[in-house]
Length: 45
Image (tube, rainbow, N blue to C red):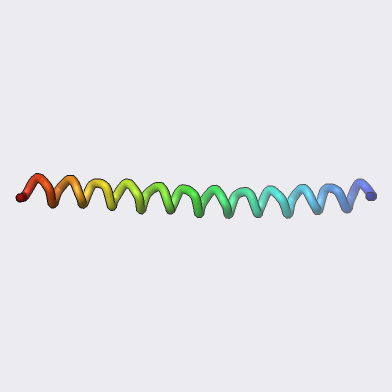
């Protein structure tokens, strides 16, 4: 593989990893919000 090609591949991987991290963060936030909602509902009852 040429140097230029490997740099392009590396750039692609970084983009993919960044997207996956964003998705993971989103899932974690959804989970936290869900847990907070459940705790709130339980405290009201």
